[in-house]
Length: 204
Image 1 (cartoon, rainbow, N blue to C red):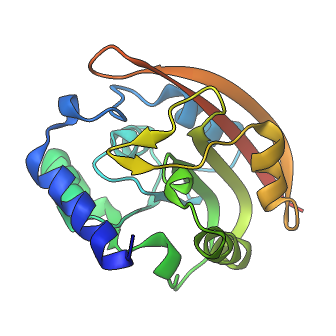
Image 2 (cartoon, helix red, strand yellow; image 1 turned 30 degrees about the horizontal axis):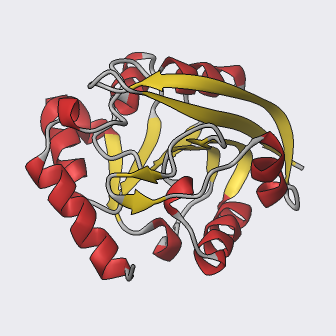
């Protein structure tokens, strides 16, 4: 799928579906928050949420007092929805509508968080672009969550790449040292269960 087709796909998803109609919605993304807080960095840490869409993570980060938050998503519509939900608080966040594989950061990040974006990259070229961008622009920690080898093989009608602790760690081992990995069942708004693997890494 070309980058423009991919963008059109996600714009359509976020234009036509509400949060309770998409599988990835979480009322409170506790695992992500726990991993972010476990880094021990201060509230001024620069955090970027890759593929954040209209996820609630940003709401909780603001609530917890984090001051330097960027949300990146391929879908401008997803970011628009998040901004509407946050109201005046949206002004505290940097919003970036871009494909992660074409992202050209103008700053570096202390915490790179990605729940369920990385697994949509299914070609070696896409994966290596992503890794290259992360290696150049992450100072401290990476937190990556993907479908596990016990999880779905597709999401939102698209093929995904499954990972386990070993294969996910191997992707980033050149520049990042694994801290810990967990697997977790996510229950979707429509009651199905998806198994995820989450790993945290520290710049080596």
